[in-house]
Image (tube, each protein chain N blue to C red):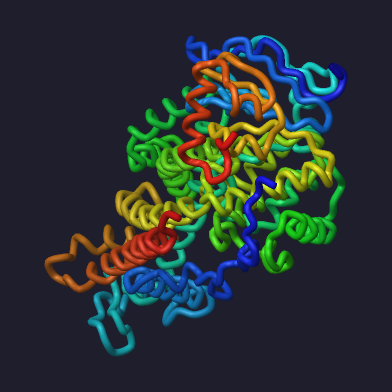
Length: 291
Length: 265
C-alpha cells in the first residue's frame, strides 16, 4: 500500500462561481459606456434619416440661403439653401456605411493576413510578415488618393482604402496573437487529439484572437469615420450627390469667417463619432483583460 | 519481446537548429505495460513524447525509428499521424492551467478527440463528456462539463485533460509530468486515478517525470535519461534501491528529500 489514505477530502466539490460570467458589457466602464452611447446615437440618427429628415438633404432652397439657426431650419442652411440638420443626419449614414463596410473589410484582411503571417510554414509566414510591414509603412490616405486617381473618387474607393490600409494594421496585431495561440499548450493538445489545422483554427485560434479583433475593429471604425471625412473633404470620397460630413466642411470652410457656426456641426459630428468608437474600443479592451 | 504491438522507439535522435537534443534513445512500451522515462530538466523526456505523436516543429531534424504496432511513425504522412493522435495514443500535458482552452467549455474539450475519431453527434458528445467526467472523478459531472476551465481547480483541470486524452479510447497514454504542477495531495489523487484507469481500461502508459517517488507509483520499469541519452534502464524498485548511474543516484537522493512515501527502500 503505497498510496496514503486521504479519507473524505478525496473529491472536493467544484469551486463555487457566479452563476454566469459577468458579460463584457457589464465591465465596459464609464468611458466605454459613453462610447457605446455615442455610437448608438449616431446609429439611430442614421436609421431615422433613412425614413425621415426635416427637409430632403440635397434640396436647395435659393430663397433660404444662409438661414440662421432656429425657426424653420433648426441648424440653419448652407450656401445653396440646404438644411444643415438634414445634411448632418444623412451624413451619419455615409460615415457609418464606411465605418461598417470598411471595418468589415479591414477585419477580413487582418484575419487573413494575420493568420497567413502566423500559421503557415516558416518561409511563407516570414514573407507575409515583411509584406505586412511594407504595407504598414504606406499611409492609408495616400493609398486612397492613389486609388481615387485611377478609379475616380467614390465611397467605394474610401471603403477599399480603409479596408486594406487599416486591415494591415489589424493583421500586424493579430499575427502576434495567432502566434501566441499557435504556441499554446491547448493547441498542442488539440493537435495531439488528431484535430486538423482548419478545425483548430475554427475552434481554438479564431476564438483566441476574437477579443483583440473586436477591440481593433472598434478603433478601425473610428479611423474609418475620420478617413471618410478627410477624403471627402479633399474631394476623393463622397461625390456631390452624397451627404458627407467631410464634404460639408469643404463646402462651408470658405464662409468660415462669416458663418462660423456652420463648420461647427459637421466637425462636431465627426469628432464625436470618432471619439465614440475609440472610447468603445478602449472600454472593450479594458473589459477583456488578460486571463 | 512482443515486437509487433505497442510502441517501440529505437535510436531516436532529435536535433534542433544544429544542436543534438536526443542521441539514440530506445524505449519500448508493450501492450499493458507501464513504462517511465526519468531525467532532469532538458534531458529530452518531453521531446521524446512529442516526437512519438509527430508534434515537434517542422525544423526539428529527427532520426531513428518510432514504430507503433509495427508501423513507422517517423516521417509518416499526416493522414497516418492524425489517426494515431488521440485515437490510439493520447497525451496528458504538464500544466493543466495552459493545456485547456480558456474560451471553451470543459465538455467540448473532453470530447474533441471522440468527435474527431468516432462519429459522435452533439447529444452523444455531451453524454460522453458527462460519462468521462464521472470516470475521471470530477464532482457533479453534469455541472462540470458546462464550466469553463478557470472555474475549476488545478486538480480538476488535470482530470479534464485526462478525460480528454481518453475520449477517443487510445491504447497508450503518454503522460508528460502530469502531476508536477499539482500540490502533493492532488498529485497523489491523480496518480491513483491514472493507475485505476490503466487497470480498468487496459491502458499502457509512458510516464515522464523527474521524480522517482512519483514514478514508483506510475510505472514498473523505467529508462533514465541524461542529456539526450539513456544511461540506465530497469525496474523502478531497483532504480530506487540500487541505482547504477550517477544520474539515477542523484534522482534517487532528490526523491528521498522531497517525497512523502518514496525513497524508503
